[in-house]
Image (cartoon, rainbow, N blue to C red):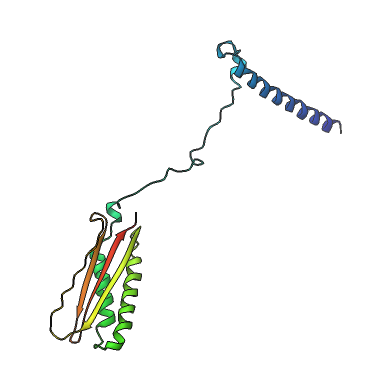
Length: 173
């Protein structure tokens, strides 16, 4: 018990010393630095800011880095594969063509998203028609940033079907 009383007394005296130390530091602020004794100068509190606790500054990226840019050749391979897989064994049927177009567009969109190009939004356009041997002319216009936005397309032909699929990749600022 006597040991407990002594340890409690020492803890109380240490707390008093700590409180006195804070008072002395506060008093040092009022005294000019050249008049503060050397033993009291060593008691100055310094707070170090941890670099990890400060929030990172926001990054505003207007253009994709070269390695982040959409690669049209890779997307063209995806389009070609999907068109061939979906249409190679089919003959034209006007009533089923609507469902084919939806399936092709959805599949192309999913597979292009799997390529993981950061911050790109995709528009997929699919045109499917019956092959009669006559020509078809198509045109598109887009207002976009020529340095960041691009497109990829491919076409499919067999005896009864023609199909053109285009993926527009637009960089999201």
